[in-house]
Image (cartoon, rainbow, N blue to C red):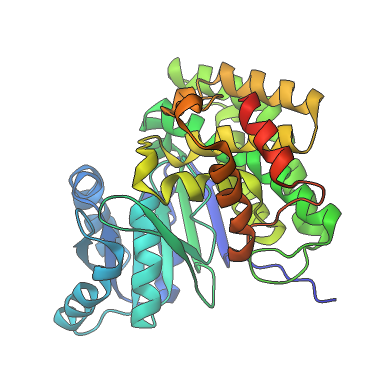
Length: 355
C-alpha cells in the first residue's frame, strides 16, 4: 500500500503579505506573467507591479476574461514569447484565474506562485485545475506534476472581498472532512491516486473543527469591519486545511453532485461552487444515514447563508428524474470521486428526496 501526500512548498498568510512577502518570489526568477482577470487587475495590478519592481521582478499581465480554459494555452505562449524571458507564473484572483494559471504554467513548463484574492474555495494549494467551457459547464479535472511553489494569502485583500465568498469557502471546506472520512474508512484513494496519510486525515478533521468553532464569528467580524483571529482561522481552514485535506484525503459524493449539476446545461444552475457543494455534502450525509451530523451541518450552513435544499439551487424535485441524477452522481466514481460503501441508487435517491 502506497500512501501519498503533496502540497505547496511555501504558504504564508497574514495582513499585508502582498506588500511585505513578495521577496519570497525572488527564488522563482526575475520575470513573471501574472494571470488574472480585468477586475482584479484594475484593483491590484498597479500596486502589485510597483511592489514586484521593488523586489526586482518585472511582470506582464495575461487576462483570462471570457476565454474558454482550453483556448488559453496558445494565447499564453504568445504572451511568454513576447516577454522573451518569463520564468514563472503568478495566479492572482479567484478560482478561474488560479485554475487557468495552473493550466498555463504547466503548458509552458514554468513554476507558479498563487496569490488568492478570496477564500471562496480550496483550489490555491492543489495541483489540480477544474476545467469549464465558455458557458461555465464543468468538463473535467486536470492534474499536474507539482503543486504551486508559493502561496501568499493576504488577509487584508481577502477581508475586503464580499462576505458571501468567505461563506462559500466555508461550505466547500466543511465537505472536506465528510469526503475524506468516507475515503479513509473505506480504504479508498485520494486525488493523487494513493492512500491517504494520517496527516491528511488529521488536517481534514482540524478543518472541520476550525470551521465549526469560528465560521459564524468570522463572518460577523468581517461584517463589523474587524479582521479578527476567527477570520484568520477561517481563511486558513478554507484555503490551506481544506486544500491539503481534499487533495490528500480524497473527494466523494459532495463534489460528485457538484460535477454532475455543473456538467450539464439541462440543470441550469447558476450557483457558485461552494453553494452547490453545501447541498452535496448534505446529500452525502443523508445517503450515509448520519442523521445527527446532517442536523449539525444543516444548521451551520443555514446560519451562514448557504443553500441547503435542491430548491434553493433552482432545482425542482418534481421535474427532476431522481433516478437519473442519482445514477449520474454514482457514475462520478469512475472519474475518481469515492462512492461510500453501502451507498447505492436507493440510498442516494432517498437522500435526494431529503434535501
